[in-house]
Image (cartoon, rainbow, N blue to C red; front, side, top):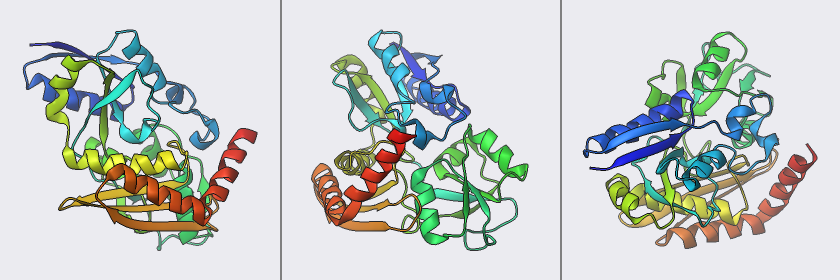
Amino acid sequence: MTRLRIGSRGSQLALWQAHHISDLLRAQGHTVEIEIIKTTGDKITDVALAKVGTKGMFTKEIEEALVANRVDLAVHSLKDLPTDLAADFEIAAITTREDARDVFCSVKFDSIEALPQRAHVGTSSLRRQAQLKALRPDLQMEPLRGNVDTRLRKLESDDYDAIILAAAGLNRLGKTQLIRQVIPVEVMTPAAGQGALAIEIRSGDDVTRALLAFLDDAAARVATTCERALLSKLGGGCQVPIGAFAEVNVGRIRLNARVAHPDGTKILRETREGDDPVRLGEEVGETLLRRGGDVILEEVYGERSRS
């Protein structure tokens, strides 16, 4: 069988993901090694991600290792992977998706609605911030960086009344004890690709692609392709106030999307069904731009360039 080298970030969650794929490959008889690679996003820990504004901040160095032939494949959280993938690379597989929703975590409070006035909520995601502020304009949003353990520790240390995290990461790590509310996608629409893992390889690497084919989940591929087509149409990266969640049911794709101003004062929603994931994503993206999404996003990108 084949020797395969996986490139991965070094966080606890990233390594769980890499070992998960490694175990599946070993079960096929392959020899697998994992190389830990520190990315730009891992090095910048004192600035909110939305202010960094670097596309590929969690993937660039891993892709460089792919080009240099130091690794054969990379395991990413799909939401971290830019939509404008360079011609050197391709997504060989998108695995069966975990729960894509966001979750409300707190020591003292059972839900967003139960938070007291002007409660302090931790998140560094403009998307989460915008949708929370639309629900509860009184909430005080506080920056929150670090790996899952660090974020939960800050919550337990009473630094925050609550924090918002992705269900997928907590489920994968078995750290669900502080989840108080799973937030419906109609209330807080997830990031495009949230909950899915992407396996990236060098373009044209037919041998590795064939070895990874068994990992590709058709429904996850269609749904996330639709979400990423929307994100691409809106010109967004992974740190913009855009939510996108698609589901496939009997061959039909239903896309729930929203663009929100970071302060929550304006939120645009669009839900539509279709058969072609790329066309559906692009059409919904175009509709959101026409309805005022262009103005919201231009302001966000302007703020980032000035920061």
